[in-house]
Length: 347
Ligand code: SAM
Ligand code: SF4
Image 1 (tube, rainbow, N blue to C red):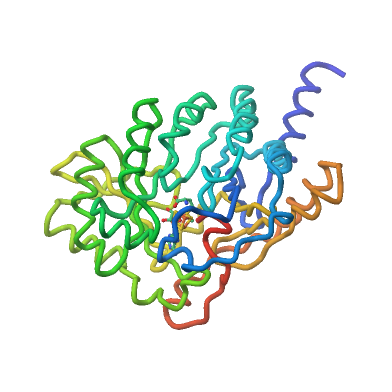
Image 2 (cartoon, rainbow, N blue to C red):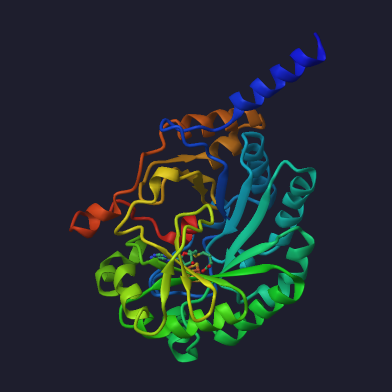
């Protein structure tokens, strides 16, 4: 076989192994929840008393690593570790270290995480050494009392120390905040000024009705259009075409020069450009945040040592990826479509 022909066949084989859903969207991004446990109990995310998955159901770190490798073999370029709180999983750095090898080989383009920041001070150095260049830190307010009330168990000081540590090691921080009625109208502007003063983007997301907190959802729901209106009294928001590759729409703040993003899962669909799937720590792959459609990859993984079987299960599931979520329908009073807590799939 000539070299040219071999190269062409290899390109064709690579293209054929990619994950493309029925709507032509290429799946290149996996969000992997490495634990459903957390040291916080944020009011919009978890109940005060949570029942977590039995340990036996949670995939071992080596199993999660194997699963990630299979995804990478299928063309996944970005892996975000999330949770629960990813940094409370014992030994989680071993997974980061193993995945960092794929970063170095160029098979993986980005390894990142979403965290509540409370453990970042402890792990920032190791994360940087593993090639983590960016981190999303969830922080709704700089008011220590309000922070304690929202997170139920959190301490703002530890989160701010975590953010400092990320800065120190050169990991770029983005702040994620959940827009909440009666809170964010007042907290947003100080949060934006603080974040922009440190060079961070801030993104606000509308609270979604997931898991145990569905019942309270309507009391907390603050449409980002309303948030923008209240922000406009204090800051000048100028529309910008900037896109980060995700669902947020960005505005430039005239007074700070920084960017603020808004994600509106409830009032607008961000599905047309969806390139992701979500995998729980037990290996359940959800095709869409707003749908229950899932496949138990953990079971396949544990039943077979053959990666090709797992890859086939992933492929078959992606072939059933829904076109989009139906949160908007739910907002109009339809019953919830996704009863699982967000801590299972990590947002
Ligand atoms: N513990 C980590 C953290 O808080 O960043 C990672 C997991 S957490 C489930 C991921 C993201 O989901 C966080 O930014 C959190 O604020 C967000 N989140 C949790 N519950 C939500 C809800 N009901 N609606 C919208 N976002 C939510
Ligand atoms: Fe924990 Fe994150 Fe959920 Fe808060 S949002 S309870 S920090 S998983």
